[in-house]
Every structure is written in structure tokens, then in C-alpha cells.
Length: 112
Length: 113
Image (cartoon, rainbow over all chains, first blue to last red):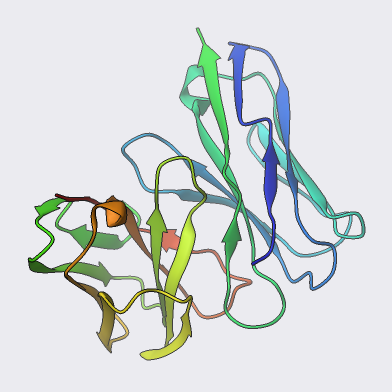
């Protein structure tokens, strides 16, 4: 079992604030790093799949960076809106087998 | 709508019951997955099927029995479950490899009494 850690566990921000959180994963056996957003009572929804060290991906106000050498990825949300409230999960599939290891997630609440 | 459906959405069963969870994907994917989410724990991968063949079984107790009759359908057969098996069970699918995005169903909330 590989350890995928996310911090912080939860976060409350005011509408309009920018925020970021971290996913840490083993730097060996790297294959890809996935980010998902999971709103209450809905299915987890894919945000990004990142594969290259130094990669940066963007989707609207959300962006992510990847450092495979030190084993971390940051997710940034610029100008948070109430609809950004959700749990943000990262998932790490190592380069052997068909495993997926998820972090426990960061629960974001954006206060209007 | 993600293109992955699960039924039932909620299930209450006794420890001696037998029930099945169903997952169907309409995305033309070749890989399907069962996950379990217990309170305050990360999503745990239970089973993986690629092209209808089981490729991963993460030491899941035999009271959980998966079945994949074709690339579009995945079942999880449940029998003699324990109260600690109460959890949210999520199905997902992807094109093939772990490089690709997984699309999740809405889950089945299971309560074992």
C-alpha cells in the first residue's frame, strides 16, 4: 500500500479568496497523478491527469502543478466561488499493476 | 451525468441477505473498477477489470464477489456481509490504462444491519 497524503484536511475561505492545497505521493514508481473534485451527493469528477515533471494544467480558475522528483502536486483555485465547495481528491497510480491510491481529500468550503 | 450508472442508490441489508450492486457504463470503455469508501478513509480500490478480465483483487474478503459479463456491465455480489462493510460503493470506468481519467458513478450507499 502506498501513502498518498493531502493537506489540509479541510479549508474554509471567503468568496473571492484564492487558495491552494497539496497532494504528496511516493516519488519512485511515478506514472501519473490525477485530481478529482467530489461535490456532495454527486460523482467524483475528473479535473486533471498529470504525467510530466514540471507540468502545469489549467481549467478555468483551477490550476495544478506537478513535481515528480519531490513527490508533490499543488492545486490552486483563484477567486474562489461558493460552487467550488467540494472535496478535492488526488489519486496516484504507480507504474506497476493496475492500482489506484487515493488521498483522503481536502474539503473546501467557500463562504459567500 | 458521467455516463456511468449504478443501482440501487441505497441499500439496507441484513447480515444473512444476498444482494447485488449493478454498474453500467455507456462510454465504450474497456476498464471498470469497484471502490469502497468508508467514513474518514480514502477511496479504496477493490477490483479492476480490463477487457472483462479481473486484473486486480486487493485482498477483498470473499463475501464480495465481482462479475463482469461484458465491458459495459459490472456487478458486485454481496453475501453474509458484516456491519463494518457499511460504506459507499463506487463504480468507475476508463478507456484502458491508469493514464486515463476514470469516470465515476453516483455510488450505492450500503447499510448492513
